[in-house]
Length: 275
Image (cartoon, rainbow, N blue to C red; front, side, top):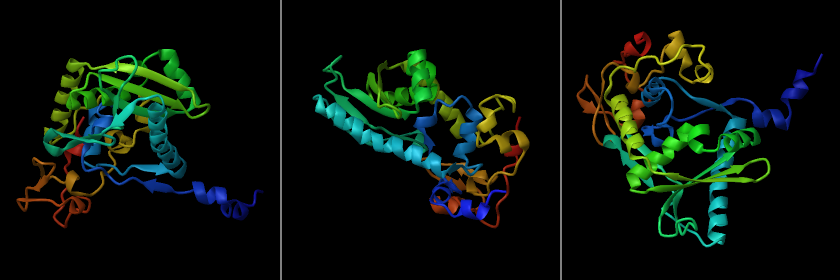
């Protein structure tokens, strides 16, 4: 029999064991607005579940962030200029936000046209799948929607999308053209998510492949109890400027208090009853 005591007292185990609970974002992110399920986005916006990552997943995400300045340096070395790094976009009455990697100037294919800069990293299998499908839109529609919405709010017409292969540092580069009709449709979509007191209708069955690993699966398909906080309470109402109102006390709710709730909390039953 394996010596479990020895296993649990290793550097590898200490670095990898346990989960990291992600702090809920106070806004609906433009980076995820292209998700296939509006119901998932509604649950996320209302903090219905507590998302968590393994320590390995956290390292993977952090590696992607560390790659951004590396790619910026590569572009600057060939004469490009990058401005507006991490510029914030705010829309949806303050409830929808996004942060761009930057704006690239001097792109050789169109030197006079500023391009949105969007940088990603991928493991080898995903990178090869992207090259096989040939476009970001076909392989990663969420990334495509992210780039489109950033262009929409920054009055840009092109994106320079660069993906780095984490295995061999190969680069996939695509210039994406702005699609106004696509962006208007996504605007209508997130506006309906914001104003709805109830979750959108369930779009997929529990056996749908995306549902199998969805963080909201337990609430959506298995009627688990949502997290207790002001955004899952029946008394909450949406306000402008990114605020939420307590209908019981008729007062705006401070952000950190939203995460806790109060002793008058009543679950919005539609979170579990909606079909």
